[in-house]
Image (cartoon, rainbow, N blue to C red; front, top):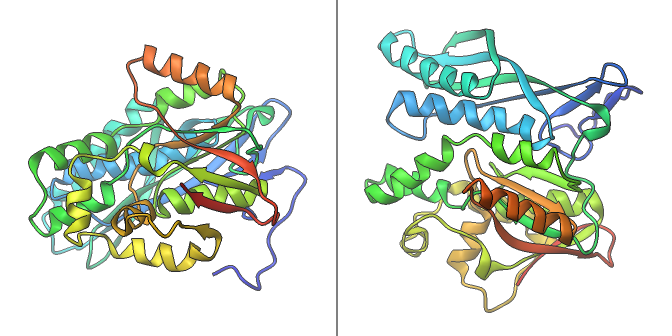
Length: 320
């Protein structure tokens, strides 16, 4: 989409478009940098309040993935004029609940008449310039940690076909409405080499961004990757979102897949996620510290891979 365009450069632009990071960052002075991101979604659940929460979390988590703190939010709304305005009120209330939980402020927004509802946020955050975390700093020997289980895209697809269990739906909603705030507060105390949150490109796509950014090879331990309840059952039934196949077609040339890997699991790993967890690259000692601190909080974290030198210097993902 940006091919042929001259990308902006500026001495104060710390993170721009080059590596497809979660947000842009502009250095204001030696003590403060501005984080800017935007994201919005079509409804993936029937409950408008829950939808508002999920969309807000999906946007705000981009700031956490850069190591920053969200400050100001603006609503982005597409909504049919013929629809019940109470539905929109519930969507906005859900979003506001997560903005407030994040310690940020809602300062306005913009709405347009559209056939299909859409909602999200433009989010501004702050960070100290020297503490910026990007998706480009992974080093050989690093451990990869994941802070939420995968499978929200599969559950959403199963739910649209009225085939998802209550257990799976509730688990997906729990994780999709969870801010990555606690994890961000932990990584502020540690030396994290690279980070991203898992969203539309799926685990493999976002892992490949880290691999490309650092010119390394990412090894993913497929048997260790945490999944939501009954995900493989739904995958075996073919309940895979279309975005998984788009991701596979786009990324597969740089993904090494063993011939014996279950094709359904492969599709799950390519599947888009909504408001997913963080994928973090840290050295072994820092990873062990993160795991210890996160479990002390009774939070979730799982080791899912490691970083190796990539002999081709292009960045690849290897599924083990």
